[in-house]
Length: 500
Ligand code: SIN
Image (cartoon, rainbow, N blue to C red; front, side, top):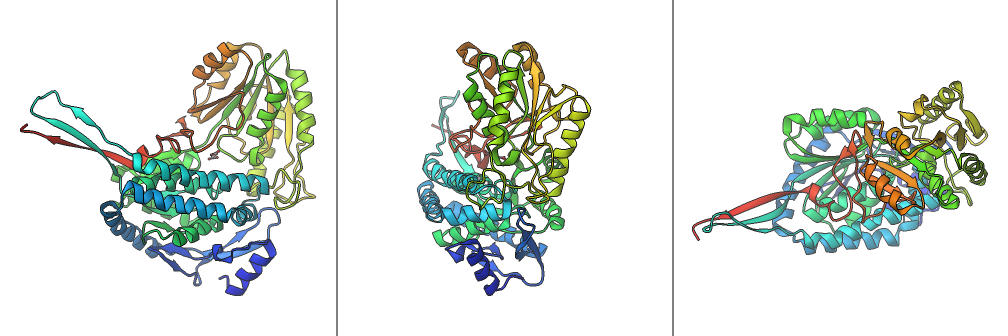
């Protein structure tokens, strides 16, 4: 377990000013359960070094925390208003903003992404608390005219109950806040299992929740190791006390959670894998398309669910686009995310590196050419994969069908709009799509034809708190953020008044 002295040394080494953010226990019913013998190590993917030992929360503690969250829910529902919940969330937004630099450093240390990306993530993450602080008092019901003159129908949006939240490592802070902001605004209580790779950022948010004065049991954060993760998923899904699961992660795990939730018929919101197409038409502005492609495809070294996976370039600008793209990619700097000037950090684990390599090998075997990169950057470390651009990628390459989730830009040539729409939609997934064109008619046409929950037209970076984030098909269902984000955490109750 990590002692006080280890935590102090950690803070000094990584320049974390507010040491109260560094937690290694579980946050349960307003208390910290300190790690005993059951712990797991959190590692820095840039160096492979152990950072701290964090509690592997025992299953009986998790079971108790679900019960506590139910008790807390009954009280929170009765005693809070939209406005009072908004005040709590606003406090949390202010605290995140005050501690932004420390939070960003924690993200980089355990996730590896460049500090500029982590700063962006913390700002983005905090914005969900601000957004839902404003939405909380405005969750209105309706007064619906009945077909019977003697009746009135009134609806209320009521909180669904205790929510089980399962979050990924690629946004250790923002994927918690995007779900938690909406849950709290609606009046729900939560039990949260953060990704095993990145619990320190989640626990730092818990420290701020405590500081903001949230009532006990409203938010519970329970780190577990990889092995226990599966058990917790099953426990959340099968618990009759948990009324909703919100999950961001792979489609395979989403399918499993959905099956496991069948016995308790839970409300579900799933943000799953993608296979985003990015299309550059002949009439695109090249500079906008290059910036947008890099922003979408190489954001966090390709490790976001909305990263472009397949890049289709129309034949008329293919040569010029690929030449300019390679020039720009070569200007990017890989390294330890904490170092000055670094734009791209390592991948999260060796499985991620192997996947990038396997997609490159497959495409090259089928005739693609390596325009830049292509290898593991062993000088930097085993988890650094070179930012790679492949040209002349055939439509039969695996990367057309399977999400790389890494820094690989495969360029695929196409001729007509009709052809590329068919290629783009030839997938079970539908999270995000992107295209670049200066033809306003095409913006409407293609924007409406692409089969995904979100489309960027002349924009490679699309996410913000105001966007209804979510997908279709195998990319999941439900919307996070925006005015729709609250709906997933509420149920509509109708009261019919008769005898009038
Ligand atoms: C994700 O990768 O799951 C989220 C990406 C984003 O919110 O921008």
